[in-house]
Length: 171
Length: 279
Image 1 (tube, each protein chain N blue to C red):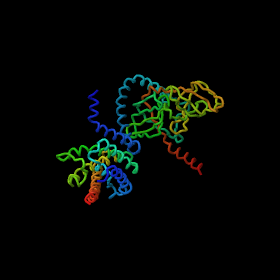
Image 2: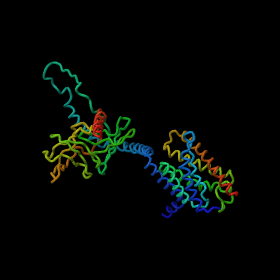
Image 3: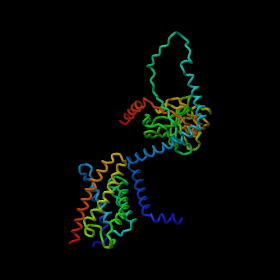
Image 4: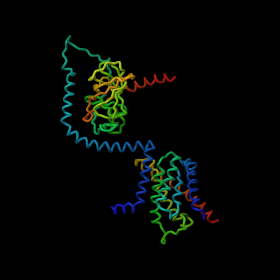
């Protein structure tokens, strides 16, 4: 298994660069914008302290903000995601609880579990982000629709990234 | 006390979440002008509606004094009424008034919040954009200048009062037409400073200071203050003049917002001069 202390920082940097250099420039039909960087928060170890997860999420969101001139928006949405994550982990825990060597992903939990887990978090994050961005509740459904469409694209990217991990672990 | 601490420890994760969200939203509102304007318009409307309720109570208490002031103002307006004039010559008067243009429009407004004890005092008015109030319009009271409109929302507007260390009003001496700028030093709400009056001008205590009309915000000749005392400083070109405001800023409730119809025209023309200078 790859060393955690090397893996997570390099994943952080990689995802931030991927987001600001490539994904921010992808705007499918003008308004669908995937935000893959949340994959980092989803992937963090299960036994990591909740407060630390939140701090790291804040830092991650803020670094995305710095590059995309959206001061604070991604930070607030990422913090919201980090807030939901432990509750969701609790609800979706297996009967015997989590084991210390389990990683969040298809390998250890199966595709259905992972799909449910990441889609709930992605949807929550995107809804929060898009509503903070427009900052009002008029045009509710147009914002809602944009958030959902972007969430679907992000989810597809998350699943593709799982395939990479799946392969490398099998080899 | 122990329960309180336990409460915080128990929900510490939630409070951490709140803390991070507050920081994030602070960053959002501080740095994004769009979010900033929405935030302040919303709070402005909320605060304004609370103050207007509050002031409807205080207005009732002040009714007697306001009535008295209105009576005085009515009295001074009476003498301009046409019926007070008597014809001296001839049978008919023909008035072809093409020489005079109406230049200023007045809208009455109620003050719903006011302060005099800060360094930067602002006044909130009960009318806003829907009544045609725009940033930069002048505000005068029955006895003198009040300030300049600083920001507006749909139903309310705030006024940068004369009692604000950032406020500068173009003013002149009533009897000699020398002009300077009237400022406030943030100390006493009854006293201000008149700057930029050259020291060869003859002054007397009690001289009246009126608006100059240069700034295109106020009509010329509105009373502002009287000279309290003045000093000739060694080696300076200008007087050090202290003035008494004619308006009692602690006790104002109805004011008029002044709209200068030709303001754009004047500014446009003056801008042309500046551009020629640049070339």
